[in-house]
Length: 316
Ligand code: UDP
Image (cartoon, rainbow, N blue to C red; front, side, top):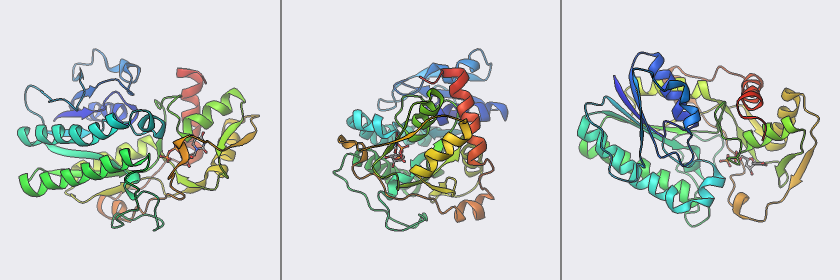
């Protein structure tokens, strides 16, 4: 197959490039390198079945030749990034999804939208099944990301129903692993890099919000299975092992063997406004339809991720 992956130089996108190349396919990674990095795909340069196109998907996309699959991963998924670039976030979710769907339609390609657990907003149903419609504040600071993905889901279903494009929607819950940016502001790189430097881990507010963390290889396996299955409704992919942020900080300290303390910060900017109080995926649908569930424990995943930050990028 010939596969286009937007956001292909990003954290998850680059792991998908690796996987599809290893499976013997031709892969084109498209990225504007705003939050993605050539370092994530440097090892693929010169690979005979890999191509990179530097392009911003909010503009018309031209790709010569046939395509069998388009996976639309391009996005600014870190809260710090989408708070800093709110309009670009809305554009990549709306215009970028429109352009990539149009491309998939023109090429007769199967399409995947990388959506998010943020479509559930600050959820009033816990854990979150795909049937839950969510609790999103459209005009809050996180609305730019949440609503762009909700619009992207609606657009994907419209192309499926009206144009019969063969679409998939994955709702990705917090995912972590090597190739995350050390400075993207999310809790996993923040805590690991702080632990490696023996700096205090910055727990926001009381640390009682919950999240669950999926290792990237598990997510990639789920996406590959979803692409191969005949499922058009959204599918949650994530690890249902739930932690409070404070418990997670303790876990990171234990796994890295760090001397770090924990400090409680109360951000006065918009970082924690509308920050979901709980989040945990109900993965029954993925288990039944894809035979999928996470295999990598949080301890193992954190060890591998810490190793990446220690060796590849330094703890800075
Ligand atoms: N968080 C924290 N300290 C940090 C970074 C994040 O306590 O240094 C909290 C944040 O407020 C949220 C959770 O950790 O409740 C997960 O945040 P992240 O930015 O990783 O992503 P989110 O799940 O909110 O999209």
